[in-house]
Each structure stands twice: as structure tokens, then as C-alpha cells.
Length: 256
Image 1 (cartoon, helix red, strand yellow):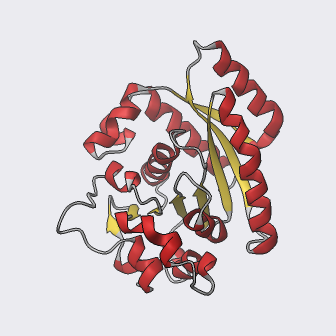
Image 2 (cartoon, rainbow, N blue to C red; image 1 turned 180 degrees about the vertical axis):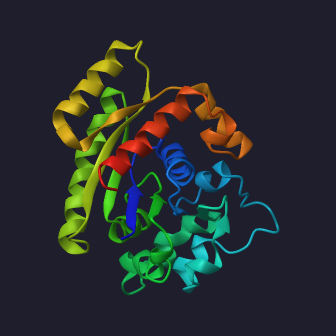
């Protein structure tokens, strides 16, 4: 059965897109899993991270065409590597809330689009925008699990409660099978006393839901997107590669 993860946090800059790209790459490269990455963010950072330019005139269809015009998701998928595929985003997604607001069943557009494609993949990873609007709702309705990246800063914890409430609402209204697949501490700097304090708080509050793996701050993780590469092709011996490899191992150990 395909494991569908929505990577969600309404706060930007917490490592959400970096996590989507590098978990996908780790599962595909290290574990030979068939992975589809879906970019639902109008900023298209995940698409750019993997070398796909939405500004390229030769760029084809995107998730906008799937959600807005009912194109099959298979029509827009591009190959990143043998086991890693991408459904790219478009700037046009920025109008999704307005354009899709009157569509019946608008919260389930992505779920319906994945019906024909899901069996082709072991993992589908959805990079949701940094908001809790219609696009993120589509990600949560389509997903089986939610992965929440949180930055090791005090204020980052404030939004987690709101996100958990949103997950509960989606579970009650649209997707009873939705579960929290894990809380991931990102951008961790062990030299900062506050970072260690927040990490301890997250682990204490979430218990087994908190991943044992912590993503440390690493220059290579920040540089890789500029080259259009995952951390494993850009700097395979870096701390970033080590951390995301460990995270992929932990996801597999948890039974996807």
C-alpha cells in the first residue's frame, strides 16, 4: 500500500521543502523505493530544488492544471531519477483558493487525482505551502500521514498546536485515516542552549511521535537547491546527507 505523507507547517522557513526533497531522494536512492514528490506550493521551491524551472518556456503542465482543469497527474510528472519523480508546481497555484473556492468537492481534488497514480509508487510526499489554506487542505485530505517539521526555536512551538487542531478537524470531516506520522526537529544548532531546550520540549510533548533523528544546520543543505540537486548528489558525505539518510531509515523502520 502506498504511504502518502503531507509535509505541513503553516510557518515558513522551517525546513519543509528541504525535508520533502531529501526524504524523497533518500528513500529512492538508499532504499530503492518508488517515490513521487508533489509540489503544492506556488513558490515552487521543491521543483527548483530538484532542477525543474517553472520559468523555463519549455516547462509543461503543473499541479495547477491537475487541480484547476482535471488533467491526469501522470501527464505532468517529470523524472528526476529512476525511482524519483516530481509533479511540479506553478506560480498559478497562488490563485487556487480564489479559483477553486466554488468547486464542489474542492478539498478532495488532489485525493481524486492520485487514485490512478498511487499504485505506481511506494511513497508519495506532498510539499504543502506555508499556510493552512485550500492547497494544504488538499494535501491533508489526500495523505495517510502528516510529517511536521519544526524549527528548534521557542516561537516555532506556538504554531504546532494550531496545526494539530487542523489535523483533528480534517480527520473528523474528511479523512478519518489521517495520522501524525512524525514531528521532525530541523535547523538544529547544538551550540545554542535554547535549541536544546526546545528539542527536549518537543520530545517530551510528542513522545514517540517525535523522530529520533534531528536535522542539524548544515551549509550543504542550503547550497544544494541552488544546484538543483538533493543533498545526496550535491554533498553525499555532509552532515545533511547523514541526517536525512538516518531519517529515511527511521521512516522505513516505523513501517512507512
